[in-house]
Length: 347
Length: 103
Image 1 (cartoon, each protein chain N blue to C red):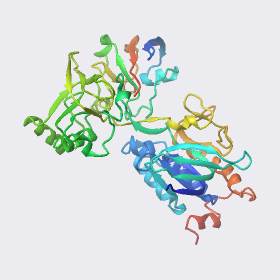
Image 2 (tube, chains in turn orange, green):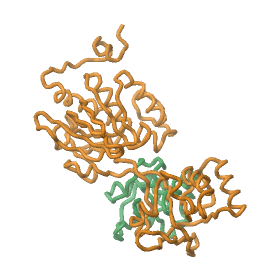
Image 3 (cartoon, each protein chain N blue to C red):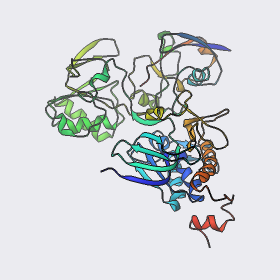
Image 4 (tube, chains in turn brown, purple):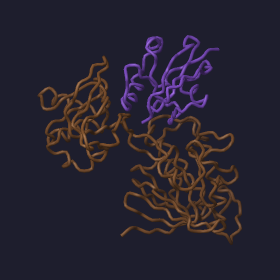
């Protein structure tokens, strides 16, 4: 039984621009649901640079990525949006007309279906996905012998496991899988690890006691027939190569962004970006908007502040689709009692 | 004035006019070659990974720990650098790099 949700707007992407769109839509009494593939809100700001200072957000001489996300969450709190995290939008189909758009949006993970009057794509560089090492034929082992995440530890019991990487995921899984694996090998490009010190220490002591192996180098080739891994060729910095016997490889190289299913929704694309007009930030499909880093138009600047502006203008047009009979009165939050009521601050 | 030479993923070599004070990633992107530079040069994504020709390796400032940490997230060679961390100066006239495979 899949969930079925009817709402005004579905926002794809819960980065800063998607979050601020909730505010602009909320002021116009438009309800929305946000979908994001990450387990947390904030997009790149939260995933790539939570601690990095940002200096070009109007009104903030300096704010960190996570600080900005936290402030946006506080700002949109009065509108009580619903978040669907850890879900990727798989399909988007038009079931209305250009004059009265209606869309069916489906997510992959637990198959939620949304029916909505407008869709705002605020997906930045696309969806975050594990970085795949560029090794020939790696695709043919994915799902059988190569995994980018551990869903069930039991799968790796009595296996010869090769873990690749030097961050928290690689080290945590090294320490957690070592007791159940037949043999565990950790491979990293250098003898320095950017993981929690006590986990690194634990790994080092397992290596010292001979209970696991640590190799320095890179995987240059995979061996094994019929999607079943038998070994990985490791190349060291000096160019020498040797084979590591393994049934399973777990590369942990962090996340990157890929356009993903967006390419299949019938939208015009230009170099993986979605062209929009600069009045409404609407795509070639009436009712589907694109704001933030994912869109393109003459003069586009990939700045967070541009995305905020784009969201405000898109909301005006969304209002016409959601409330076709209502005239839209432009108001300021400083002076409008009705807007202040919506924000919960009216005297 | 000077140039950099960039070999793309199809093996084609491009000679690009460089700008003093620009990051090599920015020069490559400005000329329209397919380099992602997802995080915009913040040393947070490693999508501007390049291989530097051997004769140029020791003419560059060595990578910071921050850059090394990002290089941990891609498949590297000894010549790997992040092009957003190389600021172009006239001493780098003729710098030779190859775009690393995308991940």
